Structures are given as C-alpha cells and as structure tokens.
Length: 222
Image (cartoon, rainbow, N blue to C red):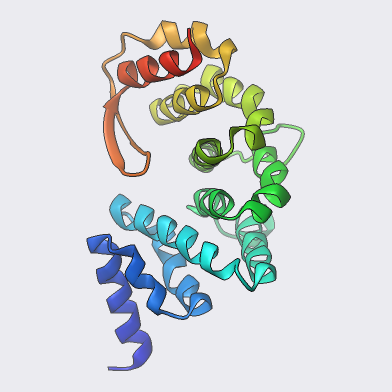
C-alpha cells in the first residue's frame, strides 16, 4: 500500500479513537494536509478531532516555524473569501483552535477573526460560518478572554438577531465566558427553554438552552 494511503488511513483511525497525541509521530506539515479534509466531514466526531489535532500540531510547529502557521492562517482566510470559489467550512474553528494554542498567532489574528462578525468588516453572510467564528471566539475566551473582549457587541447582535438555535446556544456560551452583563436580559428570556442543542466544549455535548443560560448567568452574575 502506498505510504500516502497508509498514512491517511492511520490518521483516520487515530481521529476516530481520539488518541490525538499519536498524531505527533507524523511530520507536522504533511499532517496538516491530511487533517484539513476532515473539516468538511459529516461526522462531528471526526471534524472536532481534526480541529483539536490542528491545534496540537500548531503548538508543536510554533516552536520553530511561526511563518508556516501564518501561511496556514492566511490559507483559512482565503477559504473564507468569496473569491476562493468555495465555502470554508471548518476554517473559523480551525483558526480559533490555532489561536487558542499559540499566543503569537492569537495576538496577530484576533482582530481579523472578530471582523467576520462585523457588517463594516469582513462579515460572513453564511450563518453556519459565523457559528464557527462565534465558537472560535469562545475557544479563545477560555484561554484569554481579554483578547476577544471587543467581540462582545457582535456576539450580542448575533444572539438577538438570529432565529437559529445553534447560533443562540453558542452566543449564550460565549456571553458567559466573556461575562457580558448586557446579555443578562436576553439570557433570562431564554432560561426556561428545554430545546436541546449539541455544541463542542472540550467534547461534544448535548445540552439544553436552559442549562446554557444557567451556566452563563452564574458566570456573569445575572
């Protein structure tokens, strides 16, 4: 069996069983090329395992090749550009995972990430992509909330303007992580909702809007 096919199959098995440290035996640059297609996977387990793997490898690469990470970030940015001819599914999440893993990349690219929610910035018309941006902001907020505090106003706009359950759920989650006081009224309006949603917060988690509201309210002090 050719080495490319053999490596591809082995990486798929590693992602399925979640043993991400085993990815470190592969050459980092080559590994990224294997992981990127999983961002489009219909399997949420594989998609999120790949995203976590990208963060793990990014941290390793940052030790001696920051420029390659900048190139990779610009690749994700291109995927989100209308001129790319495609739709960058998973790109915001991968960007967020890298930014959470590598301080320098976080400092350099946070404003760009937030701009994807700004109507006078690089606003993404596709709501599914904006959900990825919201998740990425939350991922960074868990590591360094001060880095994404300027996103607060745009998170509130998304929460108030969307009818999509996942968007609302992600916004509630981020409001809690950023302790956005202005979100309290909206959170109280939704705190009795037993609608269920699946989000990734270190693991795939099925929860209710009510539980997310309770957690956010406790963090904020509503």
